[in-house]
Amino acid sequence: MIGVAILGATGSIGRSTLAVIDAHPDEYRVVALAARSDAARMAELCLRHRPDVAVMEQSESAGELEKRLRKAGSGTRVAAGAEAIEELAQQPSAEVVMAAISGAAGLRSSIAAAAAGKRLLIANKESVVMAGELLLAAAQAGGATLIPIDSDHNATFQCLPAGARIGERAPGVRRLLLTASGGPFLDWQAPAMARATPEQACAHPRWSMGRKISVDSATLMNKGLELIEATVLFGVEARDVSVVIHPQSIIHSLVEYLDGSVLAQMGAPDMRTPIAQGLAWPARISAGVEFLDLTKVGTLDFRAPDRERFPCLGLAEAAARSGSLACTWLNAADEIAVQAFLDKQLNFGDIPGVIDSVMESAPGGPMSDLNAVLGIDALARERARAVLSERASGHRTSA
Image (cartoon, rainbow, N blue to C red; front, side, top):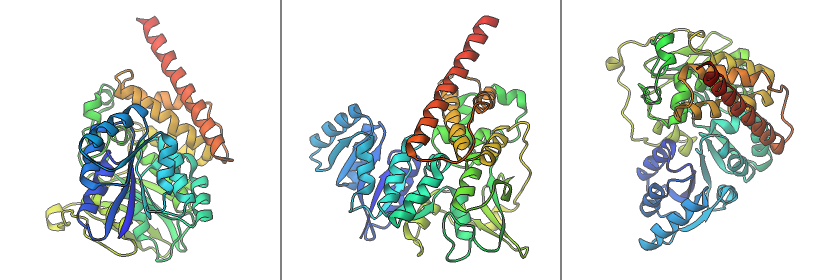
């Protein structure tokens, strides 16, 4: 029986992972769960899956979880704080670690799992965008196996030659093509997009995702971050990665080879498929998803992204060319801008402008160590908040 730890258990990826594990009770056991603050949901998961330990990032939430579990007679141990999540990621009973804590908060635990030699299923894209070089180095030193879970990168991984290694360019590969659904605003005009609400931005037509990643999908920043990820995970340059709009979300990625061959991975838009692939690799197990019927799909459409309406894609490409520190800066600026939009303190159409203003101060070049990355991240967040404050003051003055 394989022990699995899930970091970000109450989010969409965490819930999907638990669904796949539920379908294979004789092969996998949930040994640890971690989440940020949803104690009520975490209590439900603990009572159902009976992990040895559950960790809440916030101490107050851990206290609430402790009360709920003790009242229900659960023996699951409860801990609190970011350091406890790092310890959880390294515990011996967890052979597989699902890294699905969203945002920069998932960085330290991802690197800890890699350093401990785990099979690390990487659903936390920020770990790769912010500190990909450090993550790869930790995995190499610890003997970890890294498997990307983002639909595009998992699809790319499946299309690479047998024996391809994460972090190295596979022989014969000419180009990677990442597909994007286009999000909820694919055919909206720019003026209407600028006035879009958080509810509209989070209403993704194909995928069920958390609110932050849904907004990133609506701006195409998600695809820009995935482009940066692809350069790290597959050892290619930014110029070797292309983005194509594919509204049906049936083809998740394509790999073009030097001989003209193009291999594509196809499937229904359901995250349980890449999760099952990562859990069972190199074998295959049932994911519980609907099987693809191409006669029902009918037509597959492709188009180039509209870079005028979706400038975030270009911002991410520029960061990828500038180096790792610029990517850290970009990620931080995006997190602050998106949260401001979700809090209704920023218009949707102003998200790219805020990020662009922050990126004017972005450093270039490679990263040195984790503390340097976190320091750059903190500076970028401070700069992003200053830009938001300046914009708010300007609006009040003009009013």
